[in-house]
Length: 514
Ligand code: ATP
Image 1 (cartoon, rainbow, N blue to C red):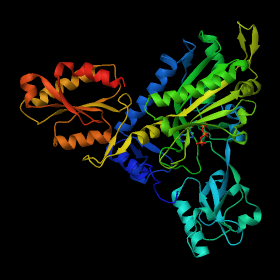
Image 2: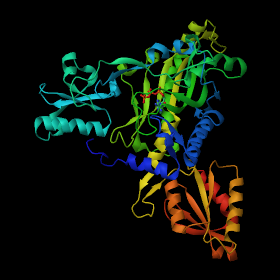
Image 3: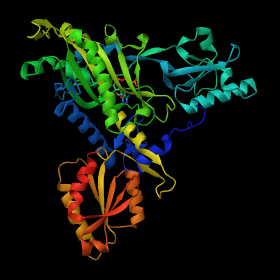
Image 4: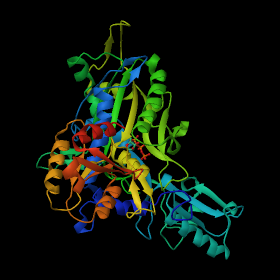
């Protein structure tokens, strides 16, 4: 933890710099110095994000998974980002959606109270208590340094006690030194802080016109529950899926796109009878983990963690539990952090909306001859956090390559599917290459870019494609002109072989199925 990069962890710094260099992700408003917690996606990043979202959409709504040999039933919606503000009163977000925050009166930094951890010497309550931010190597190292200095020696890990900041007494808080502060006693009591971005609808901007940017996509689904059951043939059990932006005024946005203030979610609300909810919860936990696995996240880097009772969200209180699918991020390594939550929301949301809107939202189940508000199982994934997981998983340092790093995306997820290179920019080679590019772009079976680049040494062009994670490069050379074959170079094995130019399309389609 004290080292910037824990043993075996990939370097976030290198990954962020590769993302910038190759056009995956840039800081938003970069030419104005950026804006904390906001990111822009470049040509490769937007395609990677689209591939992930499209795959989720396909596997939820177009070819949904099977249960007992039959496809489960899931339809899609796309709801507004701004809704009637009463929605957020009903959902518990106004009032409830606030993390307790701690301000530092010395540095003016603001921290999420549950992210602050204190360290001190074991068995010794004298002196000062040093506070750092959980999973933040820099503030931890700074806190340790201050503690070592106070004790005038380097303390071993076993000698250090840790405890959450929120459990400190008022006296202990008075001697606590904040993560970025010099003096003790500058951290305030934890206070509520609303995470929703506010705006005004219409020109007058009065209190009555106040509205919110949605902090999750889920509520837009609940709002349309009756519309969907009234207008389509779906029958409980069934799901409604949505992909879209969500906004949270996070207190400490950090770890690149892991925790940002504007992000995207892929959420599905699965409506079922309460007697079946536990089984569906188990089904979706297993199914979602299998899905992340199928798009390239290795089993070694994922765990399923059941929430402790005191962690459960307000809506899950009557439910049978919530599970997180967690990924081993470079900044949590060797530990894990949330990628997707699968929650049993009981019928909390529908009953809240029923009460607040005074509309009938019950469903009539013909098979059971029963009218009820269905329970809900919610697999809620971060799309942008998923992009980060794909980037982290793909990032593979390799000193033997010119690029020193290769992005090993699964071919089906890779933003660039293939590159076509004339060996030299003359002798008819560019024309043959361009023709092949047109053919490959015209094939509709794959979602991704086909790169064409006639310039630079072939080694440099391959190196760029290694960093971009392009699974295969085709090179048109002198022999192509006489025998109609091209060289292909495999990103992962570095194997090179020749293939007939008219077979390239089918060969690539096959490769992209993996
Ligand atoms: P966390 O505990 O990390 O704040 P959460 O439990 O509040 O997350 P949910 O409300 O369950 O998150 O949202 C579902 C998913 O949305 C999360 O699993 C995560 O992938 C994504 N997500 C939530 N907040 C952010 C954020 N600020 N930036 C990027 N992705 C986010």
